[in-house]
Length: 82
Image (cartoon, rainbow, N blue to C red):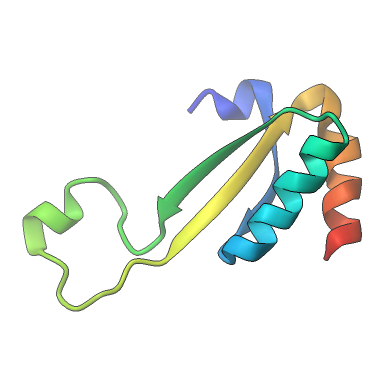
């Protein structure tokens, strides 16, 4: 929740290979990053406990955040990788 005040989201990817490419490039540039993975098929933590999976497979999205002062450089790096 505090990401919105201190961090900027630079990417949201579902492919682990693309996530590794982005995080490797940010690390090589010396930019500290923070990754957050979530299942987009579940709205909250109680969905699966309440109704079960119902055959719905999880779809994971990894969001990559950086500090606000490094956001411009990180966005430039992410866009050159795509």
